[in-house]
Amino acid sequence: MKQTEVLVIGSGLAGLAFALKSAENFKVLIVSKSELDQTNTSMAQGGIAAVISEVDSFDQHIQDTLKAGAGLCRPEVVQRMVESGPERIQDLISWGVQFDAYGNTLGPDLNKEGGHSKRRILHVQDQTGRAIHQALLKTAMAHPNIEILENTIALDLVTNHETKPESAGPRTCQGAYIYNSKTKEVSTLFANFTMLATGGAGKVYLYTSNWGGATGDGMAMAYRAGARIANLEFTQFHPTCLYHPLARNFLISEAVRGEGGHLLNSKGERFVLKHDERGELAPRDIVARAIDAEMKRTGDECVYLDISHQDRDMIISKFPKIYEKCLEFGYDMTKQAVPVVPAAHYQCGGILVDQYGRTDIEGLFAVGETACTGLHGANRLASNSLLECLVTAHESAQYLATKADEPSKIEIKNIPKWREVESTDEDEKMLIGHLWDEVRRLMWNYVGIVRSNERLTRAQIRLKYIRQEVEYHFRSFHLDKDFVELRNLALVADLTVQAARMRHESRGTHYNLDYPQQKTDSESARETFLSSRTEIERLYYDTFHMNF
Image: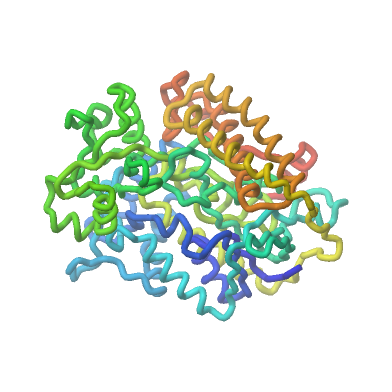
């Protein structure tokens, strides 16, 4: 057993920013499920949205965000996030991030992306996430109050219902069970405060721009512990991932379209304008559906992104990594169009939190893509995700600072040990790959860009049996990281289908053929909540916990 003041599960931008802010008042332990450079943050190309330019305004950024969110953003959250943007940019600069200026003496070079009315995307060429992550990681590793554990995955949260089974009423998080995938050891890690910063769940789909560890771990653990999950039906599909059998999950930034890139079908015709007057710079849900519809109409396996009509030097200087990667697969984007397809990119929903990242469970917080703050609504505006990470991390740390002198509420003496299973049947491991593939194909085919009632029903029926099978093997055989991720993946897939079936309309990234229109009544413009709590627990929850 190990104890710390603040436990951070996840080592992307959200987790690192929160850790750096919290380390001013607490001892912080960061748990990273893989090597530290493996995160979605490191793969983010476009940049971070913030009102920096004199020709831009907070109101314009707010309105762009609300419009993209299709009526489900929380306006007060949007305003707070947008107006905090410039200060949070200064945080990044103080941690060593150097945004591109391209000789602009008035400030950073700003890109424009889909859904934005102004240029407001700060960037570091086309590797913004990598530059930000490296700067924050370097700072965190040198901080005397921060300790980092690599290759350690959280299994489940520890609450007072485990440490004190007779407990009734509101749950309190006490820490987490963690598993070191190198030593194969399970430990109990106690903490006064636990922050989930585990990222999204893109790997629930067969085709995704996410890194291999985006398996919804935080959402699954929080749900099992009793926290509410919101808006999982809203999965954003990025319109342009490189289409090549060896490219896997390589994203071609929206900034390429922002600099004049056109989407073409196999005949060289632009087609997005038939769906939206903003063309290639419409919000991502519209562009992704336009591509999906065009591929189905023509029977083609991809469409093409063409920026070859723009200046060669500009293309190479602004998008060096994308240019280099495309060349690796035989495409010179300065001379020819590049084949692209949509892929699962971002989870707009997640663990329901308030302004300070607080969940339904006392002592448990969530930040970044794993959380649902109310900023994104039914569809995230491009490059608002990094902004959300920074703002929520800052406000969570500020809130925790007010609790620095409070006594610990941890109950250590009664903690049950993690169950130990000796069986290591190697044949059973073959099922991991099979079930993993089945879940992802099922979600892509039935719960993808375009859905229907029948498809959702079929998916839910099959996922019920997959989850039962996964849970049986998880509890019957020796722990394996892949089984841990599969367990979380299957649960988040099932919750996504449940949420999608609850929404009887099309809105934002959720499009259902049986309800093709967005409804205008106030009852439809509501968030979707899922909870594992019993009715008795809900009575205590309603009495003692905050209202969101």
